[in-house]
Length: 123
Image: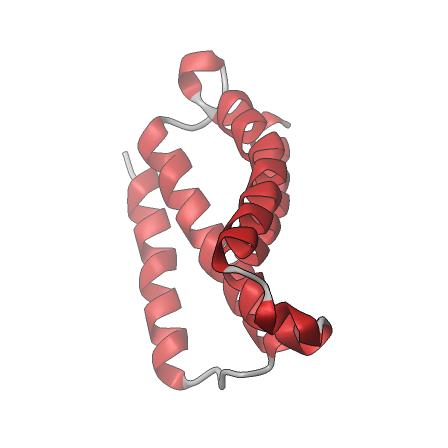
């Protein structure tokens, strides 16, 4: 069950992080006046979103890490996080931003990431 909680928390965490890092690129469409906002304000806004992300990421790492009784060693935890990050990012870019086309080379690269997860768990 700790593994499932870890993965769910990582998914939520990565949704917030994707918007913290890339949401400001979509902001002018939603709030046209944001084009005139100072960069420091955009940075602080992103940091605020990233702070929310940490409320999910830190518990995910604590629950999931074997050093705390979780099911994953640190390398496995990081590889899972990276795979989730790319899946969440791609989903948001395709559904929210709608600026990218998902092509065969993206699928190939994701298959390599899935292979990386597999090999990270191989004994």
